[in-house]
Amino acid sequence: MGGWKGAPVAAVLVLGAAGCCGLTRGDSAALDRDTPERAFDFVRAAFAGDRTGDQYDSFHPDFCETQGLSAGRYAMARSLRPGLFERASVLLGGATLESVAPAGLRDTAAGRRRATRVVILTADGGRGEFLLVDEPAWRMASNDGELPVQAGRIADLEEAVRLVDGSLVVGFRAPLGIPPLEGTRIHRVTLHHDWLLYGIERLEGFEEFLEDVGAAADEAGRESE
Image 1 (cartoon, rainbow, N blue to C red):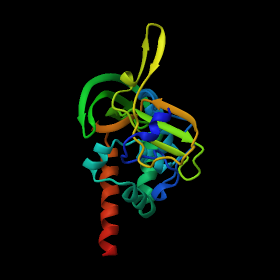
Image 2: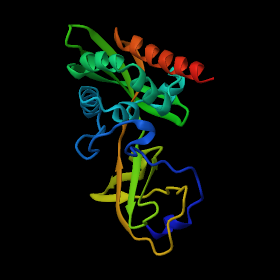
Image 3: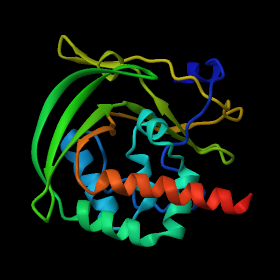
């Protein structure tokens, strides 16, 4: 692990930073998105609990790009039109999972990634279909007082962590955007799958929610000019 300190400098991602841009998050250890099923549980709990940060973190970067969403715009829409989020909470907070099926590979800005089609049933009897894409991630905790946690993405988790002849083999190089302080000790490194919302194939009510979120942010931007 000491070799990480000499890794080339790259943009650092601190995933799930609490309170970023006015968004709220829960205990990241309580739920995860390691599998499509757990990703659905995570999103449902995020909307049921009005945890806007956990909601936004569950969107794939390509999805945010397509929808014109940013963390700041999402937080702004929540403060301006909380009713939008209350309706979305009712829609998704009480949903149940009907089926999960592999959906091949999808081309993302970061490369080709595994996709899964998820079908849900909403509390009012509606049916929704989503595409989730796996963007595996790493997270490192250290005793560096200035930057105790750094995190980023892994292109291929199956290649980074393998079982070979009954042995566990771990090997990957993770560039750190900010080199740790001299003498920093690594406390913990975790690697995990992370299934994110990549596309909506059908879900009446949620598409309108996203459109209204964007409209609210645009309106606020025009008023501030």
